[in-house]
Amino acid sequence: MIRYAINRILIVIPLLLALSVLLFLYVHAVPGDPIAGMLGPNGSPELIAQLRAERGLDRPLYVQYWDWISGLAQGDLGISLISGQQITPVVINRIPATFQLTFVSLFFTVLIGLPAGFLAGKYRGSWIDKILSPAALLGLSMPVFWIGTLLILILAVQLRWLPTGGYIPFAQSPVDSLRLTLMPALALGIHLSPFLARMVRATTIELQQEQFVVQARMKGLRSRTITYRYLLRNAIVPVLVVLGLQLGTLLGGQVIVEQLFNWPGVGRLLVEGAIQRDYLMVQSLILVVATIYVIVNLGVELLHAWLDPRVRL
Amino acid sequence: MNVVDTVNSMKPRFGRRTMSVPAGGVRAITLRAIIGHKRALLGAILTAVVVLMAIVSVFWTPFDPMAFDTGEPFTPPDFAHPMGTDVYGRDILSRIMAGSQVSLMVAAAAVAGALVMGTVIGLVAGYIGGVLDLAVTRVVDILLAVPGLVFALGIVALLGPSAQSVTIALSVVYTWQFARIVRSVVVSVRSRSYVEAARGLDASPLSIMVKDILPSVVPILIVQVTTALAWGILDEASLGFLGLGVQPPDPSWGSLLIEGRQYLYDAPWLPLGAGTMVVIAVLGVNLLGDGLREIVDPRAGRSTS
Image 1 (tube, one colour):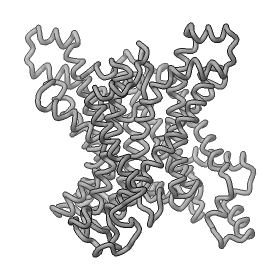
Image 2: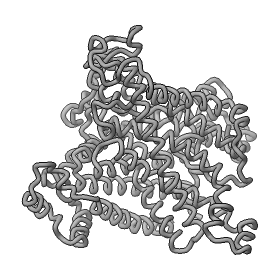
Image 3: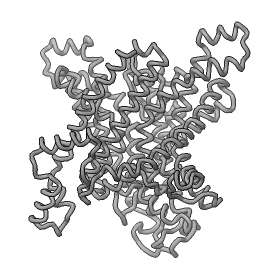
Image 4: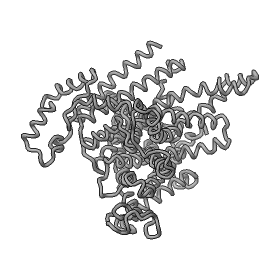
């Protein structure tokens, strides 16, 4: 197991380093001068040169790269192109909001996807199974901003149960904070759960034909015991794997949902950076997102290998 | 076998999955096969409706989509304005119709670009192999570590928000998906006897790639194109919704949805039309792609359903 883990980790490190080089080269090989583009018609050559020097963009590329990557290793994301301020404190400021949304979204995803998929698989061909398939198809064809807009129209505009958006820190008022998390997280949960439900359904169907389940049934074990101890427990494994793989969709969806619900998270910071063409900020944030994505997937893979020793072969 | 393979082998028929090479070879896609396949037919009809609407809008829309005061601002849906009017009294239906042009054009152009670049990269890397192949495989691995939408967002950040930037960004993101699939097909047919025979006849590598290998890639590419079109429509609307696509006052489905977000209490009907169109378009293309996948590889959908 330890050897397997070390092997996987050794693959991830060069991958992230290579990604950082690609990102850096791509950002610094933009045709035209982004600073001139940023200043627009007001940018005199002196002003452009001054800004370049202030942001350290007039140094040789390898020096800039080294500066960036060694800073990242110490948790320093560099400075913003627009404001010239440190990026790290801004990101740290936004992390609680993003984490809160992520966890509640995952909770809803599992809350919807796991029972739906499990019941559809267990009672194959029943009404719940027949509803699941078209519902999942519809869910997968619905953009997350559309699910969110519909939720706002129903829960906020029509029923007036919830505000249309906003954020209150959890520490300030836990109840209000969770109330505001409800809609964006539900939107993401509805967006992510169809995929999970289908995976769980497929696994449950396969499990019921497995030797150990058939044997348990023949031994005369109570059907409840079989359901909980044999089926549900084993159906949890794909849930973990799917959630890891779905993280990319979640991160992408979160960018949109944060925008829709005025949620001050990291995703919105990325969008703000993109709209302002603050490519120094975008470059660092993308690397952070990719690193989180890769590390979580590595974690899920190792967890999966630990739970299911066949994977290690 | 790692997690990705495990999951790929269990993946459902939808979602961002890319097709693998069927073990028993592929079947031809014919019109009769599409008509005979219920889901493919429904998908084709939905897609045709959306495309038709875009074509009609080039020549005719109920009102000029850019004209102010075609009716009172915030008129609820009625006979003259079936989808109501916005804050400037512009007709929403006309704007949705005109917006469909942008959405479909961006998606189609992005996929076409990715198709050409991805096929060339995949063919050459898969056929020539060696260091080039290794480099392409590694780049694909690295780029897959960045969620697609985030990657596209980064490219738009560099180019500045516009429809062209979105097209280029999506094209770049999808290219590697195409390259990966084409490469896998090429590697699997590279050593088949008919390719060996062509090599024995002293055919040039270019001729072998185009005449002997490319035809076996085509059916899988057709399926991949439909899948990518569904992503394209979704991603264009998403980037438009983030304010990174078409800039106001030009309409697109994504930008209509932002405008809808601003006036939810005054005019809750504003986002309904554009959102429904996105769902219809994506659902149609997804159904068509799903059907085509089963036509190409009849065993694809049967494993669990």
